[in-house]
Length: 319
Image (cartoon, rainbow, N blue to C red; front, side, top):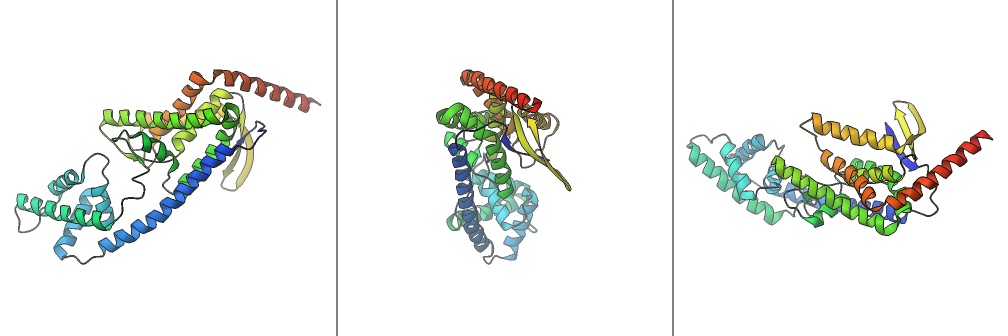
């Protein structure tokens, strides 16, 4: 596995905005973790309330239909659908639940529907909103605010850790080359580009979803880096079982590898797991297009500086 660390390109000043983005992501994630603890405690209190055997059996059957593990997962599935409102979700679930003994099919569905509607009202009254729902982007919403906020929120520490390492490796150099205004403008524009294209494709496919994470912007930084410095190298650490080391890899090779693997996944697989592969591809494409449209002058200067650095390095080695 390769873990990029920094570009082999001198930075005369500290990448303050790159670090600031990392700090904001960490701050948001810490707040998410705190809110999830409160949310989990409220869900536990709700689910541990005394219920009849019939009500518990209904929860078990609903869990079978929704693929949920327990009461909390059942209520999450009911109250956090990206497209349908709660009553629509409940009606669909009631139609699929195995009929209750002693009741006709219609009476069973009506009883399950009314019971779940009652539980949903109690759940909303006693449990705070899902901590991610105000930050994550729902592709059905077309909401520009959450298109941006979702980039700074993450699912877990592994998610944010890898994203920030990759982000810093490429963004520090991009920030120096394009300056603070273009740097911030790119993060905003690429966030909106990822959100809009994601919503459009999800609408065409009829399959909306929630998404969060900086990985789309990370791929955007990689695409922009490859445009601005096509011949620059990225210092990477590699490890395989017990073999460790570092090597300088051309930036465009890393971009082609990661972006190419995501495109291949889109073309050959139907289930992407928990990874928003479309955001990766659109982010990388957005980064390269942003450079082509707005930063051609910056590219010419950056390529000239890189050529001078390469010439000096060759001269040093010949001595």
